[in-house]
Length: 225
Image (cartoon, rainbow, N blue to C red; front, side, top):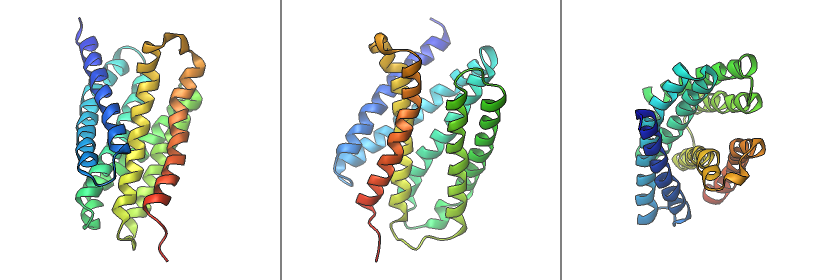
């Protein structure tokens, strides 16, 4: 078995652990030992996913498709950003300046450059999935803009870290479920694969994430008088 297939198998196995731990953390009581433990396992699993996905994306970029490889590299940027924010928001919840330091600003720039680049690739180079690729460019562009606004002015809400954590975890959930719907589920149920499933797999989690973001923000971060 080639290194590519071995790495892909490891990637899929870690992805299964990530999906399971995501839902355990999501359904557990927030702040409980189970929630914290499952959240740590999830972030470690997501780190494993990124590390295993990087050589796969490079191989696709160099040997198969520049468009697909570039898009996968971009997905690594936005997913890595969500992972970092969900982790550091908790660690730096009493230090906004530390949270918005060099790493935060570097990720902001990477998201902007990645979003603009993938938008150009989607519009001018992609022959398939053009709408999906171009639409996902907005995640990086709008994410960079939100990060810019956040670091320019210190938040007045002491629970700013909770908002950052929740929004980042919603983003992590998008990445996890896209991978499952796009790669895992069609192998389990091959009869549902096809162009419709491709669109549902990419855009469905994004739509659900927007709704979930509003719901979680309203539930856990009520407006202050």
